[in-house]
Amino acid sequence: MATLLKSVPRLLLCSYSPLMARIAGIFYLLTFLTGGVALFVRGRLGLLAGLVAGVSYIAVTLFFYYIFKPVSRRLSLLAAFISLVGCAMGPLSRFHLVPVHINSLVFFGFYCLLIGYLIIRSTFLPRILGVLMVIAGVSWLTFLSPTLANHLSPYIFAPGILGEGALTLCCSRWE
Image (cartoon, rainbow, N blue to C red; front, side, top):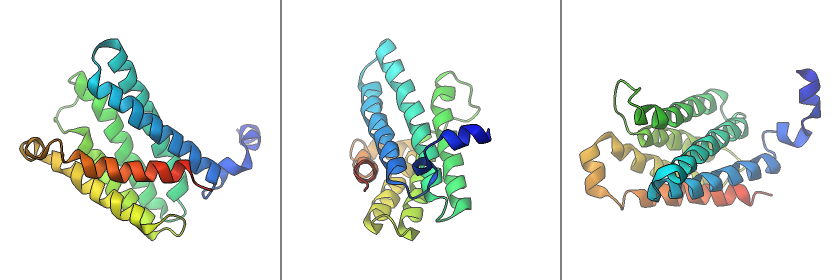
């Protein structure tokens, strides 16, 4: 294991690494693109796009854990755990393996709230990104009430796309 870690470039192990942030940004962008395809395309291509989106979001979650760990290890770990549960809920609920039906966007709402808070507390990202992520989190939390979410749809997606999209662009251009 130690040999493997020595072979990993030192830049990837630094929490503030611009390279780590760019990689997270690329995975976030891949999540957006393939997630969009999964929403609008049915059949095998839609299923494959959903799978790629899920795996990409898991990568984003893990990278963000390491990026925000210096801000608050506990909150970063909690955010990662919530995101991973949300990533698992999608496929599991599709096969009716979840005892309670909760839209996975609810988990991502809590995740965005925590990431937004971590961004606000950090010194290496603009606070406005944190505010946008908190607003995105609140918009995803409307899915706690399917009636409310249906009533606000499609407008309720705008804050989430704006907040997460801004963070994606910031990460992919991090210097």
